[in-house]
Image (tube, rainbow, N blue to C red):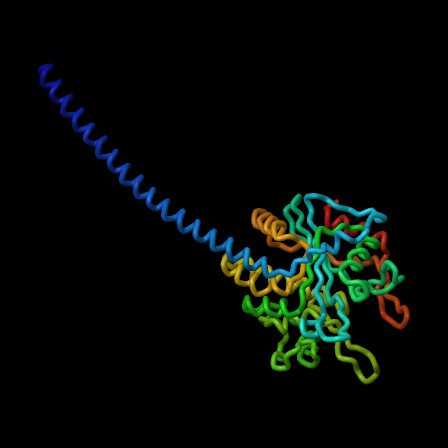
Length: 361
């Protein structure tokens, strides 16, 4: 082959290669433009959604009853040595045993039907819940030894907080009070929660006024979906209806727990079932749910702190609820004092057990 023929062939190949490169370049430009437009549209949609979510979340959080007086900050705890950790957030949860109408009625005594410590353990990426038995016989500042739930009825959240500090040595980072209206509404909003009822639990719910609405007193033995009123009744069970001989028949959970131990176990089971349902909701559904519930909540935790806690929980991805209760098994005695059945705890052992559970220490 002559040199000039080779040069011509080489030139043709070069031109063909140049055309291919130009074609690929144009294609890349088209693809880039497509992705650019898609990216702009996606950014606009995401921006709109984020803006909408932020707007709805702000609106929902605005509905909370914020305690601007900061009740817990005003309680003098200087004489108590309290355990605390900046990476562990403890919130005192109180469920009032009367709904809004009953609480507003003159002369209505307000008591704490459930008392818990919700813990956000950032250090170990855990969510924890400690139930406090209301029949624990403890020292209440200014009132001597009484049942734990007497602290709330006598001095509200402040006295309950100081009572926990004195007896168990844990510092709280805030509190939240929720009434029964909120509990019923949130359960109904998510379509109910699953529970596994024993024979004694079902019979008790169907024959007593634990379930406020008579038409819902139709539970059965075994697994089922409970609506708001049924779930609330389930959480409130303590013992059976008083008999002619003055005795109260026992009502037991599937694990065999009765009395107040059965009550707090049911409360924790319902909360876990609630978390299982809620974690499947979309952000918008969660905000709709929050808008339903938050008006019934009173707290001293600021809106910014709530945002921070929510982001932390979402980042952790933790949904399992680690559970505990005081008094711990084997650290108390059943006694009758002043005609009342009470649980007399070994304070030192329970204080140590609570600290170990909350702080992993």
